[in-house]
Length: 385
Image (spheres, rainbow, N blue to C red):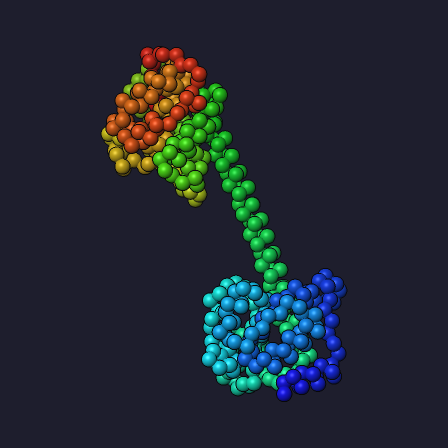
């Protein structure tokens, strides 16, 4: 009988001792390992359970019904499965077929096959189906315990490697975030540099970013999408870097030639941002190029109209005009908020997308404008330029 064979071998072999984790020459604490045993012979289950318990393995579950293997596996979450092959109703191959879908491919969870079938075909089939080791019955107790320890040690090392990989992935994510933050900071400083000549406070770009992000959320954009446009919108006037001071800061009405120069800030900004690999820079490029297009097609630089204008540019367009009109500029004083909103409503379907206007007017923007505005509509050289 198998029990007799096990008992005889154990009596003639040196007992194995479980060592605490971290001890020199030791193995992981046996009590931390969960072992599931599936064998249709109750005598085999009792004998193997007794031997493993004597060797320090206390987290043991077993069943003589192979149909219970899957539910027991899901409930117990073992570190090792000891499995018989020849069982009535559902053999070991069938059990391995059930377990395969619930064991992630990236996880090393060993199956040790114990079988009286020593044929090469059975061994090859078991290995193809996921068995990590095979022992033929009757087996030497010392050998089966050593095989179990080796398989569990391999699993422990694999789990350590997984943990290490997770830590590395976390560090990569953190480093990527740091690089993204550095990129965003550089872009923000670049945007501020473009505004410093006609916005000494440097707040215009920040306000446009914050307002556009809020407007995007009101339009139903996701948090991630809204955050992306919040960061990209401040770059809308990046091309002003290439506009001469005499034109950009002119206090009076622009000539036709000067206005043509002002208009080039859209293409200059898009050219600076062109070829960006990040979604942020690509979005900023579309905004820089399209934020002066108008719904009726009378805008610049390409005379786009309606839905042909990128939606992100339509959002920034209305925010940019609001902020430009509500705040003082070198060439004119800011308007009262009520008058700015009235102008935006008036331009619905002409300058602005009517749907964007509707959502924009449903929000309270007073916190983004000075407490009081001075009515002075006389000079509008580039209020929305």
